[in-house]
Length: 446
Image (cartoon, rainbow, N blue to C red; front, side):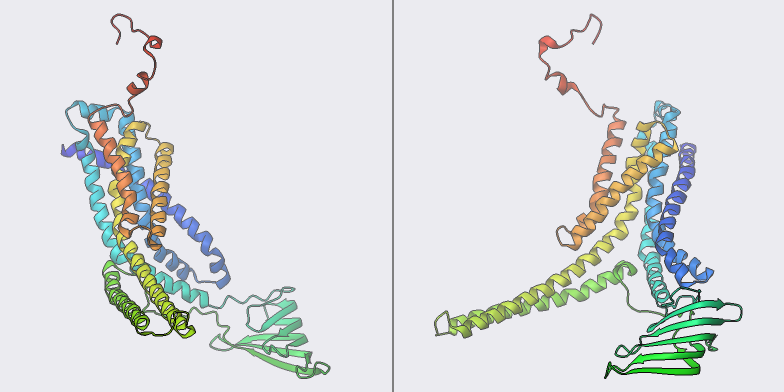
């Protein structure tokens, strides 16, 4: 039996690695497309780019591992079935439960490892990735002066240069629109100029020669000022292209462990109770005012008081709704840390019988079925998360319903294959045909 278990597990290694690398590659390519413009525009160092991919690889692994398990189950059991090895093993008296058991056991081990990963490693990587992307977004882009193209990378300046000598950092035919003073923007033109950065690389010094400054007086638009200069220097600050790394104590829901989110929920619960207490006091105060009033009901003062109380009650309800939505978001993320790893077990339950039924364990069938079920699973998960955030269904059902539905189907298929019964019986359809139209079997036929 030990040899059989090792043999079955070995059949899963190749398809598992294939599925893992393919899915991870697809996720990486999609991620590259999303951030390529940012990488090019900011002129990031190669090590910074590698750090971005390294930190974002964590969430990719959390998705690709369950998908790889599904691919491995479909392809491995499909290959065993197509070569009639499943039939041979079952003919020796081995149950299908025993055949699936080693794969199921390994999926449990993998699911447990993913729970630890999702709860401790993934939040930290998400936190560091968010901080890094925030720092990159604040980084000044790499300065490239090109002839005939407006340079608008500097706040308050638009610069047009007709000719650029990059080797000597010399410029010719320069036009600068200085919009720092919104009331009196100025236009600066110069025949030539030079560029020079400060020692810290954070300030740009632009020396202009043989030019003019044109400006309209904002107090009196009829007055126009023209200044001719032989040399004019402009200092543009905060243009450094260095990436400044920062830290942050704030964490979003996907940057917290389960324990952190439970502590957040424990802190929000008393706030909800406090808002409910205020609602009760407001309602009681409104009733007491109505009981004590002696003026007619249509009194304007009474109507104004009642409207004030109603507005206060609505404000308390909105506050409670906001806090309960926060709790739901935390609960969704807590359940997700366990439900996605549990998908490894679910995908074995659905992949094994489908692989045996498909018989052809080729890449096309294995990948196609895997992709279909994973899309179905992910659609349920995303839809459930949206419904839970809107407080339509509970976070528990939102995150676990895909596992229950697909896992339940897998258990049913495995059970039906064990008892070797027909998946769909057409006997009921025959009874719908009148007896005189039914074909009479010949002697000896059933």
